[in-house]
Length: 211
Length: 103
Image (cartoon, rainbow over all chains, first blue to last red; front, side):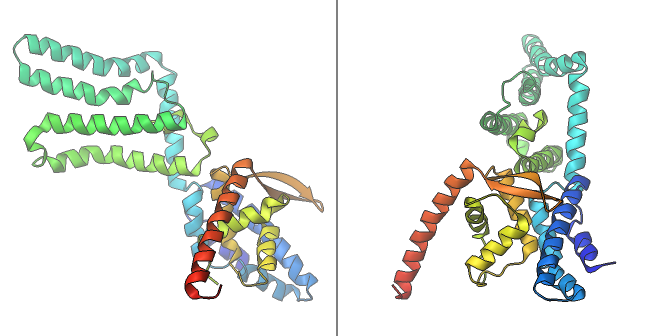
């Protein structure tokens, strides 16, 4: 394996296939230009190869920096999955309306239980409905610009956290292990989406990245 | 010399005159600094991608000597950022020079 191939393999580790192809193309292009310049300076072909690869620097450092700005394989997978989920919801209007109706149904049920004297249960249902509402209401809200999306995400976390804290009341701390394990997938998704938003130009954001 | 953090501004400056490709950007920075800013060229492209994601530069394919090359050019936002970086650098460099007593 050539020194350049070895450098490229290390520098593109964990990157998505599209990112890998782009890095390979640009580095090979750079390498050719550096090699030609070295040969023009009077170096032999072997020396020119060595100079061109050495000038690229440490492949691990480059890989760390590439992973901060280009999609990794895991992120590309998540992006694809998000697009598939969005397509699944948008292509089935009944599913879209079912998701929107769910928090409304919970809030309605809460009012029914409240009037039947089950205030405690009604309160829990109401809070569950309120916690779910920003997640599903997003399908109807005009949030698809960078700033509106950011405001929506802040509001979403405030509503969800407040509803969960009110739901558990003073026992929230006691049940923190359960809360954390339930909120962890949501937080992880949020973290990955933040990373995707950083790496993709706004024009390339799919709709679910605004949520 | 370590010039971490200044690479994006140096790239924008290298692109301020005309669009060019990655290798040429690296050479321009090295030549203009008379070899003082000798950085590893593998780190140039992640910085270029970051600038592109932030809308400071844009890239396009062109053919040069029969070879397809990716060219980069500075955007209006990038020019604004370059002017801001230049002003900040002058202020910082004046302050450091004053403290070191070499003014």
